[in-house]
Length: 231
Image (cartoon, rainbow, N blue to C red):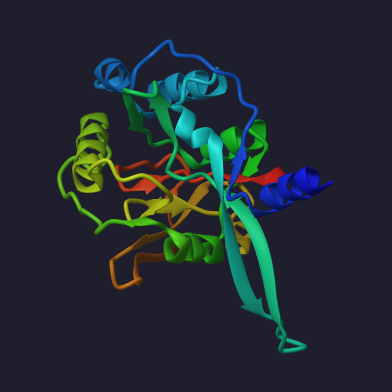
């Protein structure tokens, strides 16, 4: 009974939740960017979708981190605590030793979330992830060829230079593609909603913004998956 009690206590206190996604090691992150260097967004999305759904992602992205979020009930005034499970980093492809963050359109982001039993975060989740992050990095704006695949690769390398091998929930490196009620104002589903990219003072560079068409992608917007079965 004592051993069982210890086991149950450990399970209830765990901060990680593993996914059951398929596994594949057919392409490294650096090979992905070498192949996709001249791709347009349609070709890049197609390659990324195939790799992610086959499980060609590093193992650390399969371990979701528990994040607690507190809010005040507008009627009762009571504090409500909820829990969700966030991917420790933004969507990436590759192997455990050679991986790279990738950038996709809003429609592919939602499609991948649906297929992987996940959801996209809200702005409140993005804020709480930043607060809870173990690794907080200063955003690095880039100004030329923002939507080109080589710039995506360059930005990934810059972030890795900042990270210096530190592990754990990371934030401050991307704007998030988010879900929001404001998307209902566009019945044709033709916009991407982005938010975040927090500076070290905790303030986001990007307020909630829906000014881009759904297929717009640049180096600064990423996909953070939230495990829908972990809420």
